Amino acid sequence: MKKVTVSICTGTTCYLMGGAHLLTINERLDPSTLDSVEFKGAHCLGLCSNESNGKPPFVKVNEHLVSDATLNKVLDAIRKELKEIQHVS
Amino acid sequence: MSHAGNSRTPELPSRGASEKKQLFKELEFHQVRKASEHTAGDAYMVQKDAENNRLLAVLSDGLGSGVKANILANMTARMAIRFAETDTDFVHYAKVIMNALPVCQVRRIAYSTFTVVDCRPDGSVQIVEQDNPPFILLRNGEPAEIPFQEYSSEQGDYRKLRVYRFVAEPEDRIIFFSDGVTEAGMGSAPYPLGWRTQGCSAFVRGMVADNPEISARILAEQVVRAALQKEPDRKAHDDISCGVLYFRTPRQTLLASGPPFSEKKDREYADIIRSFPGTKIISGGTSADIVARELNLEITTDLFRFRRSNLPPISKMEGMDLVTEGILTLTEVLNLLQGKNPPIQPNAATLLKDQLINSDEIHILVGTKINQAHQDPNLPMELEIRRSLMRRIATTLQEDYFKEVRLEFI
Image (tube, rainbow over all chains, first blue to last red):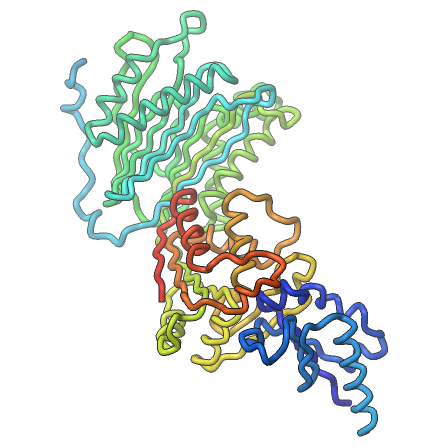
């Protein structure tokens, strides 16, 4: 099965603006879905330099960009992507 | 005061020394004080002359213990350093110190003893000892005998001044200590006469055989710890002090942080890092990106490894020894270098700090482009400007850790 890729930016700005908190996400995710999600670190996605991207912290869930990310926002985005995968398959 | 003794000056070191590649001198010291005292009675002083690359170290042991011994030892050490740094004939002044300091009327022992280690940039070493236990020279991993010249006290007592001269070879280690080391455990069943110089000598030989690259810092710590273990109840009955001077080919580290001011320099920036001959560290997300892009490398980040550390995680890039986040990690590195207690579990900053401390020559490459996002007033804390932060790290490494630091802005 295709996995959902989650990249959490750990650059200075994102980390300070709440990214540090996002690193507990693998504990918040339903264990049954944990296998279908791949977490990737990103040392800096370079998104904070352009205001049109929104506010840090930034997380990418597949191609979908989550700005001003919180655990709930990221979890929602992951669930949404998971649903789409299930629809397709 | 007669100069007669000087006519018998031992042979001067050979001229060949200056042609050798300059060796890095790692000088470290470790000490535990007598268990019943709050002040150490052994004094240790170092002077590094940046201009002519001369290194002076003095270890002095004051009579008795506690405050009295501390004052005697510090006075002697300060005198020795002041005399030695004048670049005159130190042996003459060592005699002055010995003859000026009295012998205790009651116990008939010297008010203080001392060892002065004087290294010149050409690798020649002069060691002057007055009644401290003899130093150990480890050469090719084995204790080596060094001839010495001996001068007696003019007060007709037992004190003797020993002068050793030799030229340091790569990987030489000089281990010097107070009698707290050699007399450790004295009177106990396994060590009736204490650990003695022979015991310590066998110990350092074994340590170096097990780990040929052992740093001066760790070796000094280990000697003190081993001496302490010989003591009954593991309580020091005297101040236990040990200094180690290690001559080694310099360990080089490059610490690169921050994107170059002009994008045109990105390639040059990456090339400096790629071609650096020693350990390579990149601190900063954008900086790492630039290097990865220019050199066609991939970066992977270990998201969860250090997540309880209050610092962003580290990343990996082929050919790089350490890749970390920038400002937060470096700010913590500076705090650690300035004496903040390290966290129990390692994190990016402790890894980076350890690497810096284990290096001799550190090249700091600072990209001076300002990261706009760091100026956001919404950030919960103030981020320091990279340039000034790196300057402070460089100064601390230079002044507190005696590292050779080269700071370059790009």
